[in-house]
Image (cartoon, rainbow, N blue to C red; front, side, top):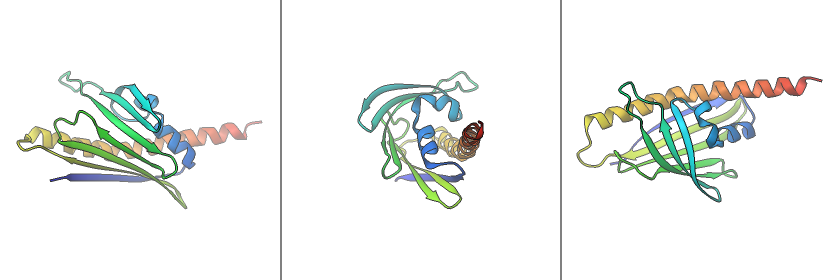
Length: 158
């Protein structure tokens, strides 16, 4: 049975800046929490295959996985699926960007399923991903809004 979690936040910055920053995959270690490295493996039109490496866990374990992401700048969506889904049967993300009077709503919805025999550790790790995703939205907002303020200040200088 598929499970899900979802996080959203409104960012007070131009749509183009938010889209560009969140889709500049190479800069993710500076934008997202916990990424140590991002390696582009392949680009096919709007689809990019990336290998993501997290910062080492306290026990020294390094987590790494490969994802395929397809960005649709017209619909303002990004669909991501893990290509090596273990410990899941599948793990998909849908990012949506929606203009609002107060800024841009950035929403991330995760859908995933565990295979039969998933361990309590797998379930706990997924709960940690959910908590980190919630925290990540605030970090994204703060970092993008700071960049927007910096760009606005630079534009005002003679």
